Structure formats: C-alpha cells, structure tokens
Image (cartoon, rainbow, N blue to C red; front, side, top):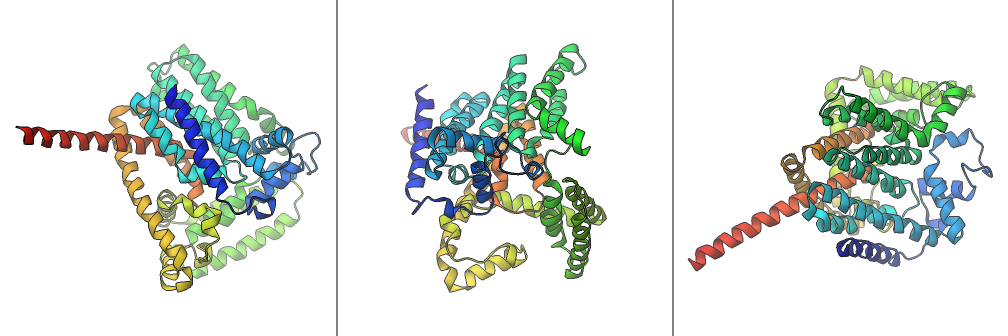
Length: 442
C-alpha cells in the first residue's frame, strides 16, 4: 500500500517538475499532431455537437478526443489544466506497470514503478496533447488482467482484459488486430484448447473486446463495405513505410514510385468515398512491397526496429527539438549522414553533446532490456510469450518508420524487462560482494 502511494506521488512530482521547466505552456506552441488533437477537441469532435464533418472524423478513433473534452468540461479549455489532467492518468500508468511487474515477481513492484516514474518517454508524452497516454492507461490494464488470467484462470480476468483492450482500440486503431492475436495466444495458454472452457473463454474475450468499437465496425461495413476502422492505413503505408524500404534501392526506384504515387493521387481526386484513398494507396504500397526482395524488406524493418528501440526518447522533447539540429528525414533517413552533419557542424554543438549523453544512457538500458528478456524465460514464460508477440506486432506495424515514440505501446514490457535485469544484476553484485567479504573474514 505504501509503495503504491509512493509511486503515485513520486511520478506526479517528476511530471510536475517537468512542466515547471517549460518556458511557456500555450496552444500556440503545439506542434504536428498535437494541433489536430487540440482543435478537434475544441470543435467537440465525435459528439452530437461536432463542428467537423463526419466523413473527416473517420481519420481517427474517438477515445482521446472525448478524453480531452472531458478535461474541458471539468477544468475549462485550458492547455495547462488539460496536461495536468493527463498527467494524473500517467501516474496511474506507472502504478499499473508496477502491478504488472508484481504479477511476474512481487519484488519487482517498486523497481518497475520507479523506472516508470522516471521514464523519459512516459514523461515527455504526458506533456503533449496526443492519444498515447490515455491509450496506454487502458492498454496496461489489458496486459495486467491478461497476466492475471495466465496466473489464475478466472473468467473475470479475461473479461476485464478484453474490455480494456477494446477501449484501447476505441482510442487507437493500431491495437485492433491484437484481438485476434490474443485469441491465438489463448490457444497456447489454456491447458485444454478444445474444451468447452476454452471456447467459452475465447468467445467472451471476442465479445467484450469488440463491444467498445462495435458501432464503428458496423457503421463502416454498412456504409463503406470495409472492416477498417480508420482511413489512415493507406497514407501510412504509401508515405512512410514504402519510402523507408526504397531507401535501400537506388534513386531511380524512388523516382518511379513517386510517378506511380502521383498517378494514384490523381485517381483519388475523382473519388468521393472516404476509404477510396486508403484502398488505392494501400494497393499501390502492397504492390511495391510485394515486388521488393526479402533482403531489402528485412533491412528496412530491422533498421526501423533498431532505431526505434535504441534511440533516446528525450529526442522527442520540445526543448531538445528546439536546439539547432539537422532533420533526419531531410538527411534521406540516413543515420550516417545525419550524425555526420551533427558532429561536423559547430552550430549543432549543443545538440551534439546532448545526443552523446542520451546515447550512453540508451546503451545501458538497451543491454538491460536483453538481459531482462532472457531472464523472463525462467521467471514467467507466459509473460515472455505475450511480450514477444506485442513487440513483434508493433515493430511489424511500424516497419521502417522512425521515431522513439513508436515504442510507446510496448514501453511497459520494456520497463518490466529492465526491472528484471536490474534485480538480477543487483543480486549478482550482492552475491559477489558477500563472497568476497566472507573470504576476507575467513
């Protein structure tokens, strides 16, 4: 009880301190997707009073916009108050991560909670107007109750896990395929996979997990004959994934793709149906990806996974981004060219020294992660299976697209693995220290 209260207050203190060091908190300072989330929330998106046309609302899921509007209703349309409201939920994210760790090993509770409290990625994302924090709140609960089901096969646990996964889909569509993925994992977890209890379990999981998004699924199928939840899939593939793969080809291939893309965009201009754009862009993307060889695809996905896992999350912080530095994407998404610009140009010196310090920290936690995943095999095989499935799924989904924020859905798994590693190394150190002490006394 005291440890849980400590985690909540410690995480709150760290996040309030982070906000304190912002020079100014104003909607004018919002960038990129933050602007969309703020404006749509002000326009009462996904409510009966929405000022945005319904077709455009198909781009996103409703959950996070309703969350921000709840903040407006309670505390007014003030950015600082909205961030404080969001931070409150992120503090519970830290606590949920600690409880997930406790399901693995009770002694990991405080370690995992503290690591979550000081996680740069959690702190930074909680200070931005995005869907990530509230998504993770429910996604953590999905993982927590799923682990409870692994440890104690109570139907209540799997029903709770399903509901929270469904709510996370209501916030971000990226977790939608995990409904089917979790059903597959259940096949390996349930002792008698073809028993009545097994079919009852997967039936209840499927029903409760699709319930929060059933209205969106049924409306999209009825009106547009698609099971897609949003219209973003095609643009993600065409403008981010495919160019990342073509980085490993010559410039001619990229030019040919650009011509095909321009042709598709002209076709899209003639279409009225909102999912037409996504379908055409997806079709072109799959055509290009299908004609790519396995080596180039592996290199592209491997590069994306490594950079997203290894890159310091603090690069996302607005204060770091405000320092003079070259754009990674304007450097042809080439890490070598990007680093060369930073280290050879004196005007990037502040960014360079910050980057060096951050990379050293990344190396430390990168090593901890792999030690933790290995040790997880001996501690809880069910968690390892779930962890590897989630890590693999989100890395496949992200592909060669680079940003430290893309590890956010699996941050809880990473923190728990690092907690296991820290505990292992500490116990090893104490064992060696005690043995040396005994030998000296002898």
